[in-house]
Image (cartoon, rainbow, N blue to C red; front, top):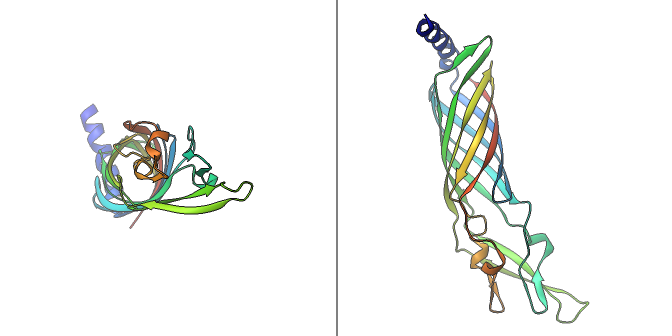
Length: 210
């Protein structure tokens, strides 16, 4: 009996999902690297439980313990926290839904590739003739700009609207490009913590349409 009920609810859920092939979403993330992410994405649902697409977003560091500095110079206060813009192609994977009244519940996974702008620059404030301050721009095209990531969790759909929430993980190092900067012989790498595996939580709001 339970198997029959589960089968009927799955078929009912699939009838709705079969009629929707487009998915727009807005995601927000907080990670263990003291960073936030926000991205907008579109996926074409090839099948009810498989979609391909991409998103564009921005990440930023909201807390940094120390900043690059040396004799008569320091990094500009506006550049203390690194950030970047990224393109994220990804695949949406969903389990068959369990229907509870008007709500559809299932397991969600979204592996992706986070592709940042492969260029990073900051301004250095020089105080050689204090209180006069001069600025100088330094930049690099080195460092990690592409990373793999994965979002896994639970999705809940009501009508054309959906919510997914859960756990995210990535091999991205938010300080990678900064580590390749130096000024007056001082490497910036000493001012940033060692690379660690990035993990955190995400929340995605989505809308399905024909």
